[in-house]
Image (cartoon, rainbow, N blue to C red):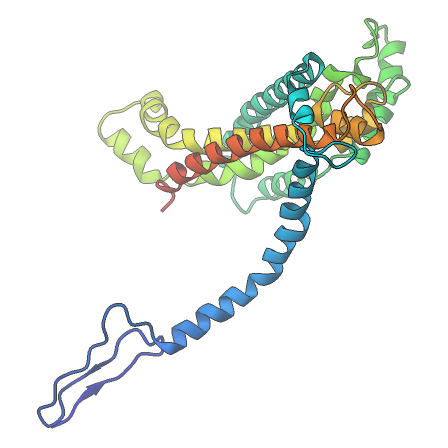
Length: 318
């Protein structure tokens, strides 16, 4: 008698009963069927365009930018550019950028989280949820020169809202035109930070299982107890991960600040622009490469923390 259980379509299991007393053949656990190997190669080929994109537009420019920081104008190796990172002007520029990024990230995360909490109470397929989702996706990308022009047209020195408020007796620029200085960047940055927070944090808030609230209520727990002992601890990695994402987004933003601030370089991206457009800055050529190196170090720290938080947050989303 002969009976066979042959390979499944996926080629995972091949078990043949003994024929005429021959032993059954069971592939070793390390054996991989040829069909699976072929599919693995095809899947790897599909990643080639993305890999080429990362190499050409991210890795290569980064290496070139950082590499120039270790050479002078004549091409000789030097640490003078990197040493310039300790210059008081550069230190103040990094401090301004960190402060601006932190303020807009914290405010954007808190406001965005409150909006997400309000949205959870609406119907997932309702008109309000669909409108907020669509608007958040668009506004999170609405930055750069377009955003700067919108703010200038609305609350600029001669903006529509500025003139209306002035006619009503309220001058928002009584103490100076702050929109074109470092504090003026907070409002434009929040314009795209809050929608970005909604996009990234809303899925985590929706992933809270109703069974957890039911178990808390069954055990006599209050609503406050649910949020302090279950909801907030579960959401904390996602919240702080989104906050780090907002921080990185503000830290690397350039277009909006470049369009609003025409004089001075109070943040690092504008300082890099000044270094590239000036042949000599503080007596050091190729200072832009050293500034880029400082930004990369900070971004690497932020990305590492973000990866750790994402790994912790994923445990509750399985």
